[in-house]
Amino acid sequence: MSQMTVGVDALDHSDPEGFYLPAGSVGMRAVQALQREMLGELDRIARTAGIEYCLLFGTLLGARRHGGFIPWDDDIDVGVLRRDYERLLDVLRDGLDPALYLVEDAAEDPGIARPFAKIRCRHSRFLEADLPPRSATPADGRDGVFLDLFPLDNVPRGKWRRRCQLLAFLLTHFPRRVRFEGYRSERRLLQRYYEWRARRSPERLWADCLRAMTSCHDDESELLIAFPSARADLTSSYLLRRGLLPARDIEFAGLTVRGPADVEGQLESLFGVWQELPPEAARHGHRLRSLFIDTGVWAAVLGPDILTP
Image (cartoon, rainbow, N blue to C red):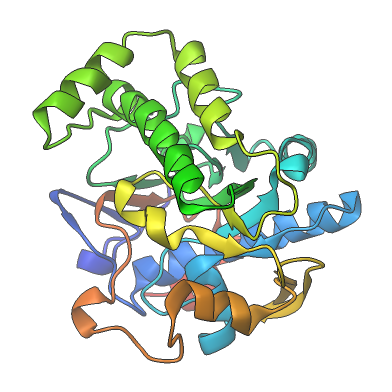
């Protein structure tokens, strides 16, 4: 495999203690180049199929505030209404080059703990420090550089019903994390409950979690939620239904892709004063255990600016 070795900026780098990719580094620019390519492919396929999607969270913030990636951000977030989610996954599997990309979600592989899909680049490894490896080789892509694709689910009206939905999600999602990611809760009784529930079959565990996520059938609810993998991200996972669709074109790193109808309204709801930069200590992406990109396979996407030492 072709590779580069340039210290912390390497395209072939591993560290059991974990590391962050510095903004502007070779590694960061390479990861963002692959993610930009995936976003372009998703946009092409979704437009052809007539499926609306939107940039979400930090990706939407980057598009509006930076014209592309937030410099220290190393992922892309995209959302689609639950009613279109499975169809989008189907057309992505049909339309993406299977030699280069992998589309994975829990419906196809109940052993995946996260409640949303990922498009991954084969011939790469982007292994988060707190997750176990899923593949022995970067070629199969199961630990590869990724784009997150969230189904957007209805949120009940009223605080009590909303809390019930979140509790049902937590009590069905975290047993899956215990089983497939080795997650451990700091609360002993909760951990025992998760371990007891984690004994169920992977298919049953996923069915229980999906039922909790889709429990609200109010298609005119004020809020939508992109259920996250971590409890800490729950309160920042709500989106406003009003101003989301119909999506509109938005520029992102030289691509014309789809964003919410009311970009500023979504950003204010998500981040408050979104124009301000966070403290320097918070300017980092995922903590990684390993990063590898096969520069022979991905040379055309990476380009000479990244491949030339």
